Picture 1 (cartoon, rainbow, N blue to C red):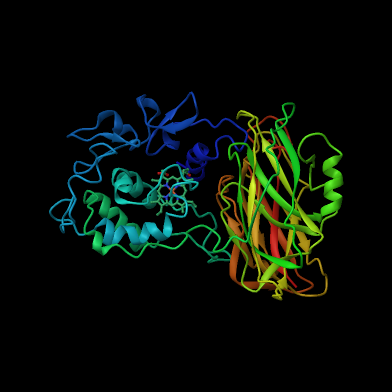
Picture 2: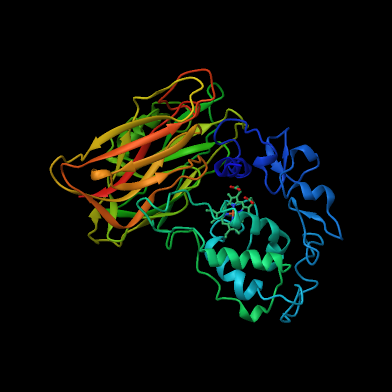
Length: 478
Ligand code: HEC
């Protein structure tokens, strides 16, 4: 079974229908659960033909095991989600909760890994559908956790490690960490001694500091006449002097209908006038903000977490500037409900002098994907925008829609900068290099996109979710 398919399907639980199509599923796409053909989602199963390898066991759990979260609980622990945590293992005896031969324990061995590698999403209020913050939550999930890490579905991390990386925040586990988690699950997920727990983590997956939170002034209900509604909203940082944006974190109001958010720098007064000119909150804005803009301060798509710009760099905002938050709402398969999206922003200290960075768009829009094509590729090249001066490339955020299979960007002399070999619409972000790649003035970037087109129409560049894109934002400085 193919990795991105399973990710995309289960991700639909969280980003339900954000890709605009009703996702079908089958046994192979639900490895630890069963496909519900009605909803198209992986769930705890009850019809054998739709259950994946470990999901299937839920139909025939034996020896006192129970079906918890779509997997049979182990003989030691899976005695029902709620009570599993406390009973057998309280008190932290060396073998608490596991077999007499247990060597690997939650507090001593597993928590130090999950704290760093899972908690950014698997926490209360995080993007993952369940929390893994403590033993009581993790124990009933032990078999699913093992399957997810051994199968390298979790933690999600899309770039090919042999191209451009390792990037900042690389989420891949080491083989030793995978083995530890697998052994813990095999030994019956013993708890061990709470005194062995690592120190609690600081904030994970969040900005270290939030200087301002800008929320849409009013909630907006997406258009009832189009499935893809592009709407811009003025949010006002109300600065009194110049500041550099050094990080941001978009909080979609209704994740199921928010397909992307791009936050453009605009003139505050021009944006007010534009806003007044149209009924309802905000204004319609296909393509960009519909106003002059030096560019965005940031972009969000499903899978993007908090973004922290490389030290010493940022995107400058002046006192007269406002921000136009362009939101692409897709409601082709989700109810239209009022949305009020927000963005948290981190600034440099007042008066700090940072290197001004730009989010440069790479637009490869000349493709026409023939009907029923498999593995159709399109390549475009982009000269250094300065033509003469070198630029420093720190980050790359590739973007396609739901038919994308692969996207890669190369520099001069075939230098590989980023390659997403199994594109997944649900996991998109800016990949930052620890050190910038310096591209000479004469250099150019080459972007290649590959798609499958299962439809009977020719698919071209377009703003609708059912159209495609071959696009990237490059975070670069002079
Ligand atoms: C960047 C966010 C993120 C991180 C980090 C992350 N997860 Fe997940 N996880 C998700 C989301 C979202 C889902 C549901 C959708 C999916 O499966 O893609 C999920 C689903 C799962 C599932 C059920 C589906 C499956 O594929 O088996 C398990 C088990 C799981 N995660 C375990 C883990 C463990 C263990 C870690 C750390 C080692 C981890 N995850 C790290 C976001 C994350």
